[in-house]
Image 1 (tube, rainbow, N blue to C red):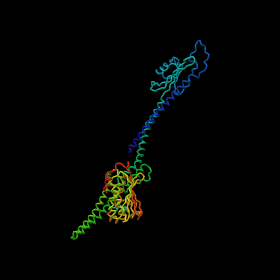
Image 2 (tube, rainbow, N blue to C red):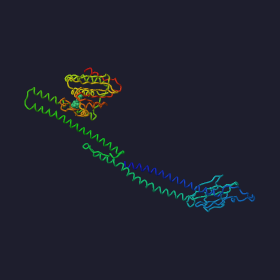
Image 3 (cartoon, rainbow, N blue to C red):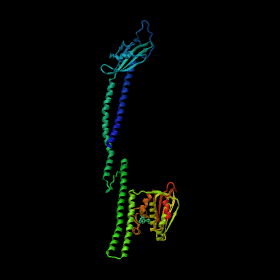
Length: 479
Ligand code: ADP
């Protein structure tokens, strides 16, 4: 990048300098030539004085024409002048300078009132600018004047400028390369530093940061973005580690229990009843472990994005009614009233299995944390172009200090009680994943001792009411 940047910049500069040099050379060339031409015109004008009335000359014999008003012009350095008869060949007066054949041709070639200006290379190789002008008076073409000026000084000036440019441009470019490399290095060094630091950061040490907070430019922004990404990565790794540690811990307890139950059962020979009781206890433990493993697997798959949602139009009210019906047995056992208040026709685009799991988890929690005599109400309605599902209970509620954490994995308000109830501490994490995967949000409000309300908002299906999955209606009917 350093080399490329410098090359781009230097070639651009070289282009600009060459164009500028061409312009400079061209304009100096034009100016010097115009200056020479002007001096020649001035000189010629001096030969013929301003018009004045012709003197009354005797007609016979006719006077020589050249005698009438022609002046020898003052000598001007570098300019040679000669005045010829109208025939262009007879010299009246003039400086001694080489009469090149082209000069004669110019004098003879004059037609009418035109003048001739040309560049002639003399025999010594020096170029001259030569102006040939016919001089007229009232009595006709009286003479031809020719003025010339060597272009040597103009060529010398142009040559000197060229030498200056030929030395100056490469020197400037060399300087530009040096400055360009220096500037590019200065600009790119922080990026090299960033990549070196990045190379040292591994999964085992995510704590390093670039820390370029003092820079308020593009590089600072890059470093800041990079650091922010590391923050997120570190937090994610930390969560993952915590999750693995918690999962191992959760599995260790029932496993230890399982082994000790088996040990106790096998310690002495026992009767059939005792073996049966031990096996039943072991079955309970393994079921809980199996549930925990299922939950873990769901979350692990969700994390790695492996869970595909089979979305279809789903009537949320029907689904809520079906889940409430299927849980009514459990509610009756716990002597908790389970009610549903569902507005029909609230249709969402969702995965039926996952939404059923969400409802089961929320209603199960409600039943678990509501003492006998309480009520768990599931309601479904539309609100602000969204489907709103609420599971409200009149149970123990959740303290304010726990509210913001209960969707975390393995977080329980009362771990002992949750475990005793068969809870894995993953139910609400799974709920949150399901809702977010459907583009919705989940929240909770609670007053301790007065119950908790879990609210889920899901986007409504674009064309409400059409193509409702027959499977859902079938399930409702079966329930
Ligand atoms: P668990 O399997 O332990 O129920 P969850 O993730 O479903 O795990 O819930 C996490 C914790 O949130 C529970 O342990 C409980 O303390 C609290 N909680 C969940 N739902 C309710 C509720 N309806 N009323 C009171 N507390 C609840």
